[in-house]
Image (cartoon, rainbow, N blue to C red):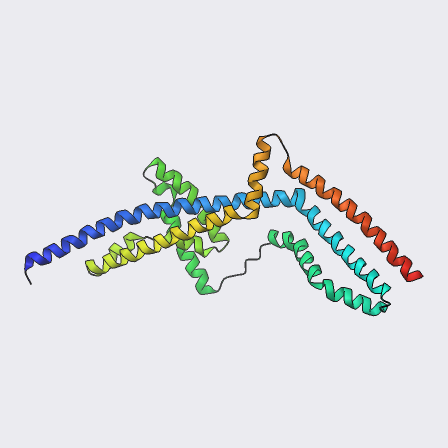
Amino acid sequence: MNPATLVYINSNNEKEINRLLHAIEEKKGLVEELTVSKENLRAEVDLFQHRYNAHVGRYYLELEQVELETKEYRLRLQLRREDVSEKEIDERVESCFRENRTRLHAEEVQEEFEQESDKSKLPKKEAKYLQSLYRKLAKRFHPDKAEQSEEQKRHEQLMPLINRAYNEQDVQILERLSIGDTDEVLQTEGSITEKRDRLQFELRHLNRATSELRSEINRIKAGRTYQLKQQVEDAEKSGKDLLSTLATDIKRKVQSSRAQLTRLINMWSGSKNS
């Protein structure tokens, strides 16, 4: 082989490696930016969900419970008119509305479960992997490591997120932020072609993470909770309290439904005594 050809090939590989390093750094910055955006968005939606539950959600749940009882008593009265026995009526009502009862009970206790820490202890191997990811990221994104003010600001945004992901055992966040470790690739023994291939793999991985993050952000924004959050915030800009209005409307419906339920219960009691 002509020595000049060998030098030419190595030169092209080196140029490609430099191009890949530049592309990886840009894409890493984008993944970090999108990760922060997605987690901030998710935190905003979670905060609004708690606010909504406190103002409105409990009344919706109460209304569902009353409406379910109303349906049950309507069925009871219908079966009584058909001369169905008391025992069979109970069995039919239980069978017909069991699924609805289970769902409502699950909704009733959901907030309690959300407040409790249900993170089980990870197996030793997974815990060690989580810890290694965390240590690597904590070292990379420590604010003292930043050389410029913009970089320091980004590190200050990422470190609380990294700490939270570690505490909540959110491996996906830590893995995404760990992609594109070019120092590890360059310091590993191997030919320049092998290093180029590994860098190409890291870039593909970063591209995939970017695409996934954008999709997740779009899913959050398309969700009902986010859409309602936007409506409430738009109403607040106009001086309107949409949540209080919703709560008042639902409370009226609850009162009306309770009055109807009371009438049905009285009819049921009367039919039993007749």
